[in-house]
Image 1 (cartoon, rainbow, N blue to C red):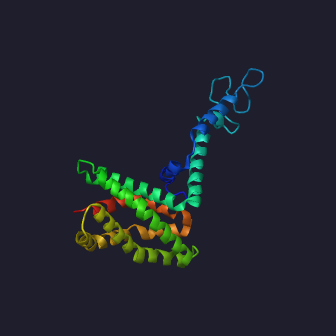
Image 2 (spheres, rainbow, N blue to C red):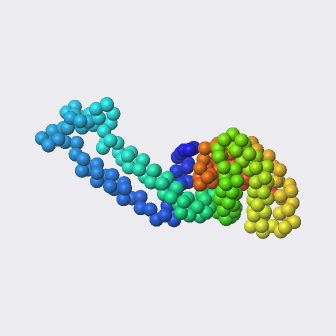
Image 3 (cartoon, rainbow, N blue to C red):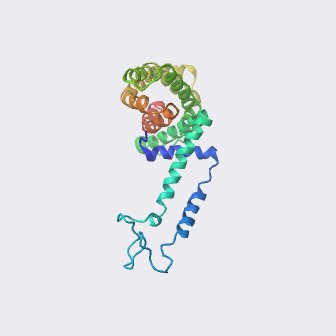
Length: 255
């Protein structure tokens, strides 16, 4: 499912950090191909199959649309997008844990950037807070999400209504509070808080996190478990969670 495609492709570009892809060559190749395809016919005039006419109009094809060679590289841009998506999916197959960890890191980073700059607006930007959230995404969210959703899909295979309902229930009743405990504990300890302070934070804010999740994730996960392949669940979750992470960032750093 190409949910929020532009945002998905932006996240998918994280694969290039460890894939070593060379995206420049394709664009230059597109230019060379356009140069080689002359709009002129062999007689020095203008071609009749979609090339420039004597009235100076843009090249058009037989259907009245613009000729592909004059589209300014749109075809190559589409190929680049498809290449990024293919590269991301390849990394999900060959190195799933690292790929999902990087995806979650980007999701939590963007969520905190949005929270600090557009919601809280406290003035001075807290870079260490963003680093803590990014590291939580990389070390905890991506890895545990890979394990949990893989196990869940194996335990309850299928995408029928009963299977989807069961998975959403397990996710929200069981995994949701476990995730909350991990989140508040990690954020507290990396902030230098002691065990007592962390326990007090969990006790005070866990239900806020859990009930806040219930306003977003049941519907989101119904779509997730019905339509999204197992390997791409973390990408889908992080696409939505960029905005949900604004909420997590605020309550996770509340005094």
